[in-house]
Each structure stands twice: as structure tokens, then as C-alpha cells.
Image 1 (cartoon, one colour):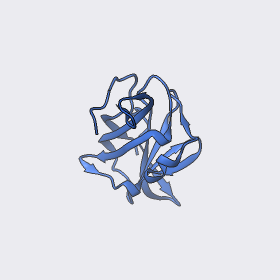
Image 2 (cartoon, rainbow, N blue to C red):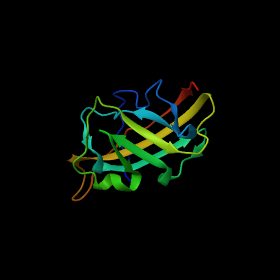
Image 3 (cartoon, rainbow, N blue to C red):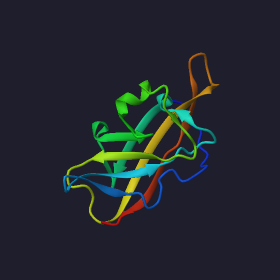
Image 4 (cartoon, one colour):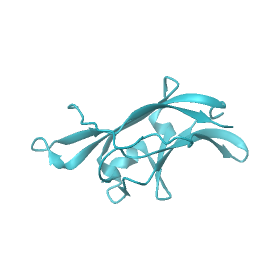
Amino acid sequence: MAIAMRISFTDVLRDGTLKNVYVNGKKMGYRFDVRLSYYRGHFLSVIDELTVSVDGEEVEPQDITFCLHGKEFGISQLHEATTEFWGIKEPATIKIFREGGLEKGEHEIDFHLVFRSPYMPIGEQAFMPWDSSQCKILTVES
């Protein structure tokens, strides 16, 4: 991949959003909200890379779900989401399946997101990659 452009327009990882997810009273994972650090929105189909590491441990791609507009997408489905537009002001939710969730307290969340800007060509079939990543300490309250 070419060098990606990066300008921080907003905090990508949203404070106060790291929470455990419960199913039938059992802690089955956790979630947090993210925003696109860009000056305009984009369709989900332009996302080329999305990874998450928590406390230095990389999350398996099949355990990550991207949630927007009440819909849930696996990482492998994003390139097909040509009609789902992610606006600059609307947060998306990242859900991680991990039985037992996270312990109460601080956790280092490393969210890596790279997308291509389809109106910024840098070659015949290449478009400018844009880095909308952030690493930040978030806290689980319970």
C-alpha cells in the first residue's frame, strides 16, 4: 500500500463508549464507537483495512462487527456495502465477540482504519489511501 494521508479532524475513538455486551445475562464481548476522521463521509465499500487490537492483542477479523444505521457487517462484507454511507458526524459501533468481555478499568484500544478516496486518483486504477486510525485508552465502567 502507498503512504496514506492523515489529518485528524476528530477523535476517532469516542470517549465513554467502551462497554461490555451481554447476551442472556452473560458477558459475550464488548463495543465502542468510532467516527471517521475525514472532512466528508464515505461509503463503507471504500474501506480497505480495518483491524482492532486491545491491550496489545490483535482481535481476529471474524470477531469484529461494524455497525451503522441499525445494520451489522462483518469485515469481509464491507467491500460490498456500496449503498451504506457513513457520514462525518455519525458514529459507527464496533462490536467484538469475546466471551467474558473486558475487565472493569482502562484498556488500550488500537483501531486501524484505512480507506481509499475514490475522487482522488493517484494512478490509472489507484486512489488516495486515507488513514483514519487512532490508539487511545478507554475505560470500561462495569
